[in-house]
Image (cartoon, rainbow, N blue to C red):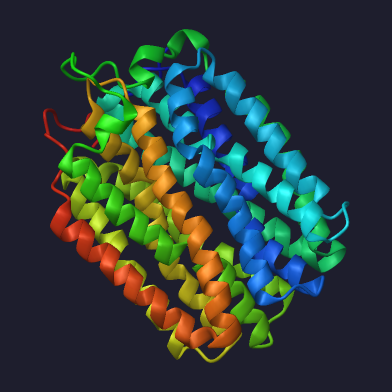
Length: 408
């Protein structure tokens, strides 16, 4: 029986929220912990950047195929469970295998492949449950639980690092991934409209060719793809970079882990509000807030001279990330309504994000190794500014505002 105000049951809503929560808990704090783990193993900064980029490379290569597979797969709940468990296993093995490139990099690459499925699968399950009319509010709620999972993961990591070292965090990931895999089966199968989850409903049916390549022929989609690429190129290396900066300034491993926690505390209310504001104020207006916050955040690190100040400034990360995760899904639903390529478009956008995850850490590792942290922050602040300008001038408002938000 559907819960009042939502077109599906409370059990399905809890299952989707729990899947978002434990997926986040399984990977949310790993970048700064991974950087510290490799640094303790006497890896160079540029080598750490390459290792971080290796996970991003797996995501880059498989993100668009992941979206296409998600559009076609018959059981998205089962696929989510498989990739969740595989991701957890990759990180559980990191502290067990020898700390050498030949062991660490392949595991990170495989984890990148499996993580490429999370965004399109969770987006498809949300759309299959809620439809386009309820998608914004539901995604806001889902992302709030996702960021809450990151908060719990960060708090847990602080304790685990203190008592068991960084290896304890990797072991906890395996446990969280198992719970996340089980949670997704709380979603009732008979409440999932699989055709709607691919974007084949909630809009006029499009008869002409709609291969995933044809999506980039839409100027709005192409402009958004460019803006997202620049945004994540600038943003992807900043979290592991700030974690290393905290350590360089003399901060403890626990304080380093707090770089994740501070951002996630802000993301929870920001994500919840974004889901409602993108219905009432428009997608682009809300997204611009997150994009323009990024250059301000990166530039602010150049004025921080203590590890606690760097951690405090991480709160600004919560604005951009909290908004992006919600609004990009709503924009993708707008741009593919009736075309049946919703998850393929999410895959393309996630590919743009993955490009940043590959290139950004490599570039930042080289710059920080040879020019230092402040020069690196300046360089990526300029990239973030370019991303904000691209969104402002290349991307139109995508929502047609055909109906008021039912949960406003």
